[in-house]
Image 1 (tube, rainbow, N blue to C red):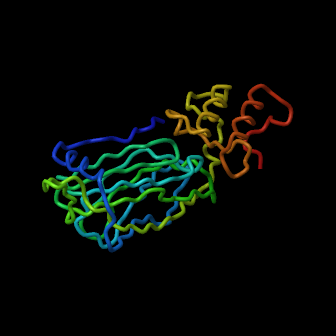
Image 2: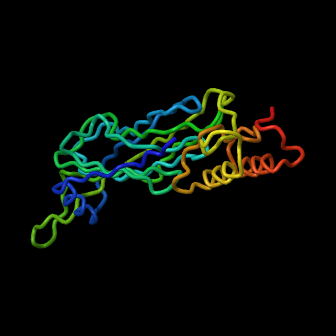
Image 3: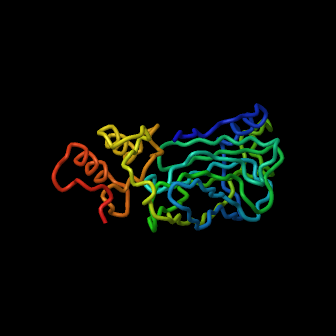
Length: 246
């Protein structure tokens, strides 16, 4: 399976506006940024919308959402329903376990609905959960520019933002994918699969997606112990003959 890197796309007039947001002060009033509890089967790709409530003339936003990469891995970000064609959206991952979303609007973001939709690949098995937690949620008011002594706009007032976190729950057993072929090369598991799984667990770039159930020791979670178990299985150590023991 290939990991689809998140994209960036910029439109010059809007990008220039984003640069003005460096200088900010806080404004009165509050809006809510939230995600909902959701679930998905092992191996499936799911959409998790990042939504806002009762917004009015948001000029730009910076959002970071954290998750457990042993349960789900981010594969992309799409514009939400509130983002118009003329708006800029720059989506990227800072590291495994966090999705960073930056967006801006020349005309203002208004209403209630999704501003971005994150695609995740489900790598965890039944009943394993991942928190979906906002570590950052900043918004800037297009109606309240900040000017210098010469009247030049140097920024916009920062809005008060409240966040509502959620939980993702993996569903469906992984029995159909219990091959140990973590790297998807085909055939019986090798030491390369154990190394790949270890790199996946620690969150190395390029190893976000695995091609088989990573819960090798059947503990209910994918950890470094699974990579060690798989390595011992490959070299034939006694007690490790069976993958995914019940």
